[in-house]
Image (tube, rainbow, N blue to C red; front, side):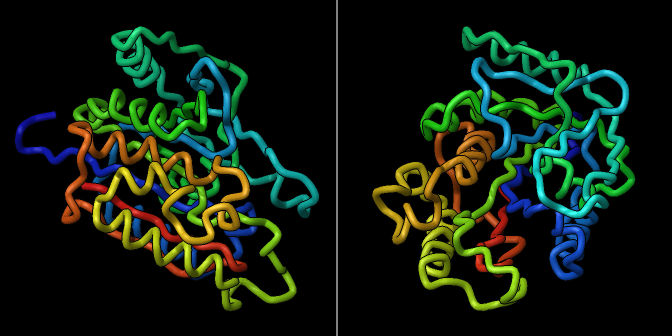
Length: 268
């Protein structure tokens, strides 16, 4: 990128289940967010729904396929398309950065974008004209994922939008379809969301990485940590120096969806 061009931000977003597409409020928020972003040359997305070691990337040739990694939904959710082009050049850049750290990148040519990737991207970049690559999480260890993000940070100089896709609270026991998407959240979800807003907003990386010890209702909010873990990668990519200034953090989306916090951040 030239000196006059601004590096793209780094995002962490709460991605929702396939029925997110039916929620006019949330799809509108994601659409407005995407419209406000400078158009990237490509997207590298880390979803809560792909854990694989060694670290791997998705298909890069032709239109990237979709992985309908859910069950029990109406048929129309399995007919959604998002024909984003592959990003072989980005895959090579990722491989080079990881090789510099002594790590080999693997590629799965049959692996498509899962719903943690295509559901939000379909709302943010509806033209599906941005080459997209998904990266697996090789671990759920906070420090290792943070360091992975730091290694990937130079991709921002290639106008790559790095996205962590999870959910700020993710306890499906709280999900009550009969209550509707705008029902008041459980107190544990609200408490965790409030803590997350303050910790991330202050750029307190150590607190976020150590959330199981520091956050209220941490285990209730995340019985398993895979939906919080993409935030570690995003924080690493946003803070290559190891620190994150509070004035570089913006909470773009907040509120709750069926009791789960959909809070999402942008890091300059």
